[in-house]
Structure formats: C-alpha cells, structure tokens
Length: 218
Length: 158
Image (cartoon, rainbow over all chains, first blue to last red; front, side, top):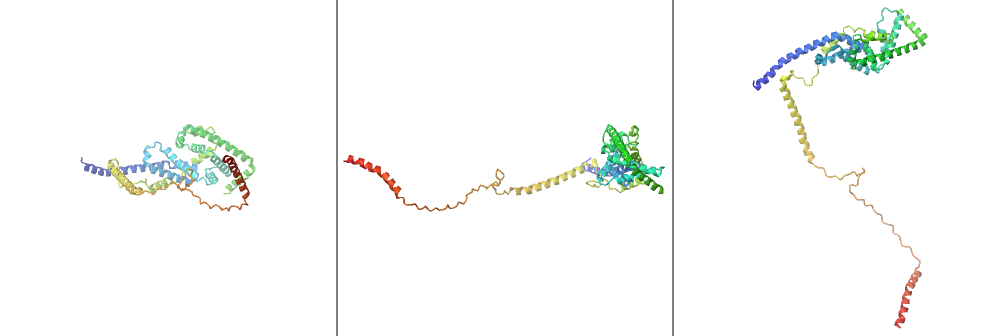
C-alpha cells in the first residue's frame, strides 16, 4: 500500500470511529440513567442525613450525578457503583456543610424533629418524641467529626462496616472503634441532658403540656 | 456484616433510633425525573480542542503533525525574541564606579576630601618693654671671656 493510500485509509476510518463513539456514548448514557433510577433515592437519604434540608440534599444528588456524567468513561472501572456513588455524594455534602457552617443549626434541628414520622402517637407523645429527636440531633452535632460521620453512616441499614470504611477511606477496624467511641459519647451526653431536664422538670412539664394542648386544639 | 447487628446498646440509649428514622425518610417524588432532566440539559465533557471528528490511534499522524507545528511555532517565536534581544545587549553601558562601600554605606567614588582651610588669625606681636638690660648682660657675659682672652694674650705679646 502506498503512502497516499495509507493516509486515505486513515481518513476513511474516521466514519467508523465516529459511529463507535456514538454507540459508546449511548451505552454510557443508558448506564448512567440506570444508576439514577437505582440509587438516586439512597443518595438523597445520605445527603439528607447530613444536610437535613430537602432542597440542599436534592442539589447534592444532582451534583453527584453531574460529576458522574463528567467522568462517565470511568464507569466501567468501578466495581461497586453504590459505594462509589455514596462516596461521591458524601464528599459533596461534607463540602457543602463546611461551607454553610455559619448558618445556625438549631433551626434545622427543630424543623427536622418536627418532620420526623410520628404517626399513631398522641399529641403529648408527639411533642415528647420531637423533643427527644431534637436532643439527639443536638448531641450528634457535638460529636467529633470522625465519630459523627461513622455514626451517621451506620444508621443506614444497607451499608456494612466494610462499605462504610470504603466510603470514608479508612479501615474496617477504625470504623468499629470510632463507632464504639461515638456510641459511648452519645450515651454520656444523652444521660447528662436527661438529668439536666429532670432538674428543670416543672418548667419543662408546663411547656410540654402547653405543646400538647396546642396539638389537640389543632 | 452490618454494624447495627452488633449494636450492644440497642440504639435506644445512644439516639441511633433517631438517626435511623432520618436515614429511612423517603426521597421526594419525581427526584429521578429531575435528575434525568438535569443530566440531559447539562453540558457534555469539556474539551480543550473541539475536533470535528474523533481522533483515534489510527490518526496518530495528524496528532504528530499538529504537535510538530506547535513546536515549530513556539521555537520560532522564541528564536525571534532571542535574536531581537541580542543586539540590545551589545550596547554597553558606561563604566560606573562602585557606589557602595564595603560597609554598605555610600562611597566617595574615589574623590579625595580637601577641606577648605581658614586663614589663621594674624596676631600682632606684643610690644615688649625695653630689653636693653638683658641684652647688655648677655653681651657683657659674652664679652668677658673675650676680654680675658685678650688679657691672656697680652702678656704673651708683651
């Protein structure tokens, strides 16, 4: 084959290449769409457990999938898509939370405690549950960051300790030790908060009864 | 293995029930659709050079030609700048003596200091009183040996 023929052959190959690329692009987009259908809900829950705001959580999920879209050529290399996606959204939400640190979190905690499901409870029980949730969330915020992250992720039933370790980039034994420390700290803080609340019983009870009465009136 | 199966505290005393409630909250309806829409409208992967066709390994000669052209342009530009700057460097600046002394202060650039001297005051000699007596005495003292000599010589002459 002469040199000119070789060059022409190179140019003619472009059509085949373009068709192959279009096919590959379609396949990648189909795979991405499948990932969205399968894991968008799980990613939303992970994002919401950290950000505690529905709009922010949805933004984080969208940003995570946009990142996947940008690096969709690496999808073939990923073994566990679920853990990979959770890791992406986890980094996004941590970054967002760090940036929005100036915002007071007390409002978020109160709002979330009110939103949490409490069906089949009386008004007084609902008020008490909301108070408990708010107390727990306030204690979680006081935990050191490493322990808090493990505790939050351990609340997801579908994540094993190996997967949590993979998401956080640490070893499985570190996950266990951090979780142990987090639980101990939480127990201590909640006991302290309960004893404090018991000391302030009269005023607290009056507030509780007022909230219950308000709920019944509604 | 799930960590919750090993929760010795049962989650009640540690508040994990609350965290599980949050983790179990359902995603809002239509989330997947909204994500799909975002992905459809998002710009595709950015490229530094938007080629009209995909370049594969078969078209390596195109890349090689482009790389060679870029290298030629960069090298030519560099040589142009170099050749422009060379004549300017040939013009030598006049030699200037070192202006900074060894101790860091400004030097005199070799100049010798010649202080302007003042004319000394002219002092007039004081008026001395009459100095005849000491002079006379001295002359007498000096004259005495001469007289003695004369006297001693006289007998010899006699």
